[in-house]
Image 1 (tube, rainbow, N blue to C red):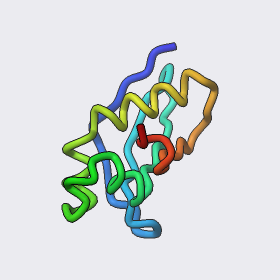
Image 2 (cartoon, one colour; image 1 turned 90 degrees about the vertical axis):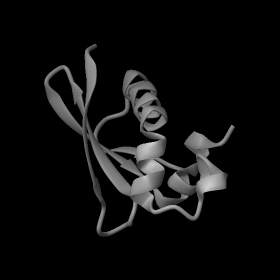
Image 3 (spheres, rainbow, N blue to C red; image 1 turned 180 degrees about the vertical axis):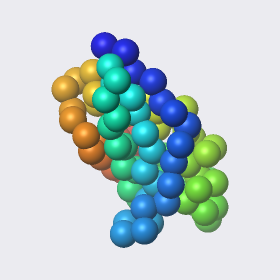
Image 4 (tube, helix red, strand yellow; image 1 turned 60 degrees about the vertical axis):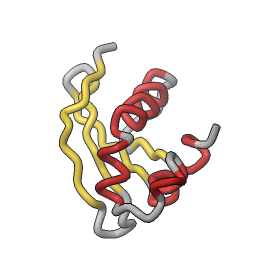
Length: 86
């Protein structure tokens, strides 16, 4: 399975989280990061904007999405607070 991330992302106007793209064997997957996950991944930066929190932790969100895809998840991939807590 070949998984790549485009680096493209956008604020989700409905949830105020962040959506980003994964390419899985030529198919586009949408990955959705909740606002809680954005704040919980690095609580010291909880006051930053959603975009700042996403950019600062983009590699971690990519890794979480890849793990979920390899485990069989299909688009859209939801990344929630429980995914980022240690």
